[in-house]
Image (cartoon, rainbow, N blue to C red):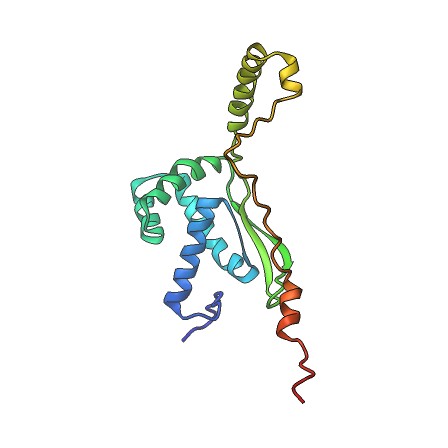
Length: 187
């Protein structure tokens, strides 16, 4: 009998539902934020919070329990190495569900499932690009006079042909008009 056994069944049989929840938990650990339906987000929230509470304990036994659910050593190292220490001072409420509205195709309620404390990535490539630009500008200024920069000479060899201009492709509606053109001579 199933007295007061309440779960989010998600219109799936048991193994399919478990696989869905595990997949959502994996993606949440990898990406820190996922967009899914509201019912799936509410269903995976207890599982994700259980995994994070195990990650805070950080023992071998808890790692093995988490591995039985997630099944990936890379995810376990991320969970216990990065996510668990991030929530060290928090007792509960590791995951939040933010409602987004309805999906256009089928009208399903959409939600954003995310960690309450998100680690922001630092972007460093911009500094490298700026450094390259600064090093290139003085070299160009030393090598050429200002007059040549302002009016570069365009030299074209005699043997080369001028570039051929491509005609624009037919417009979408133009092609449709030919397909649905009325044939007046058929009668």
